[in-house]
Length: 171
Length: 279
Image (cartoon, rainbow over all chains, first blue to last red; front, side):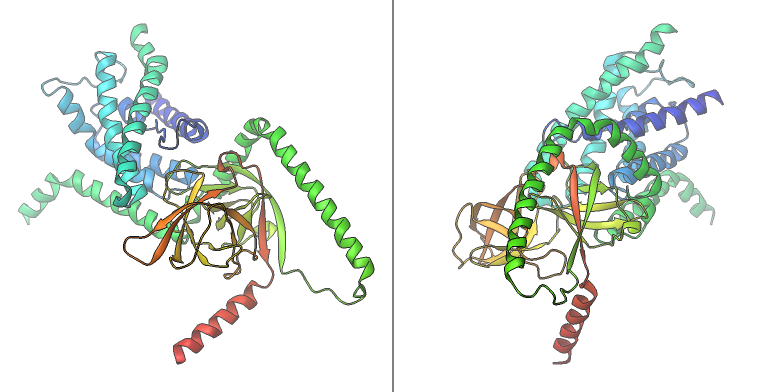
């Protein structure tokens, strides 16, 4: 029960952080900083996929509501959520992930960085491609995807080190 | 039947995924041009008031500059009033009934805006309570900003000129050649104009103003300057890049244009198209 409240609170914090802070940061015209997929990395490993898909949809719609994107964020977060189990499998094919709290599962920060990169790459590619919807701009689109993914991954990693990895040390 | 259930079970996650995707993408496609689901925009009560609160915290960054711009505008308007007063004093139509103004200006404050996305929206703190409706033009002292996209009681969202297919009708001020405004999503300082025939001679840095043909903007509101132009490979048209005067990264105060004769305008247009159809 406590963990559910914790996750809801965490989701709200992520949504507001995305809308009020990270969407306003100007790095470059080509960069769109999106950190909210971090939510997918924090959820328990063994959570049923159906629940994760529905949750992603709701969180995505919440962000769409602020950003006037009418379902784009929902679509890309659901896409990332669908790929989540596959990405976990690529990283550690034979490993049994433990049930329960999430901070213990990333055996190293480097592994988190790699998983976050793959997940954000999938998410950003889906989002930015759908958003531009015009393959005439493909070069700019590729630059946008590459830059946005790298910078979002770095920021996500910093957030992880600041707020989430600390729990591991305490335990 | 058993096989079907087994099949569905095997692909249940994919089916759920596909279903959610269809819902999300159809929401996006349906709402981009004309808003249908009001709860989905930042003009909705919850997100609107939250954005306004957060804007109160951050607006002090922009205040000095915004104040300076408003002061300059005041100065200009004051001298304009003096000039008009002088004309009015000498003219003899003082007592005649001056008709209702075609355009009415509603000042509004920007509480949230984006500029680095493919399609950008601005949230303002005026809504249907203040007489706003969908499709009204929005501009600042410098240049036009966009068109009202969806309206709630207290807030509205504005589709800015940094959006694909915004299609504001504009013209070159000197020659009168007209086209439609568009944005390719690359730089927030540079927009595009479609549909100006390539036999018209253009000059770099000529002023682009609104044409006023659709009743959204009056004629002659400033848009930007021609930045570069080259011939389209496929059509006998110019591909024109224009330099926006307005800096969309720090919008603070805007005006919404209410066209009091819009109904008349629409009626006329409808009559025209009907006539064309009958021919």
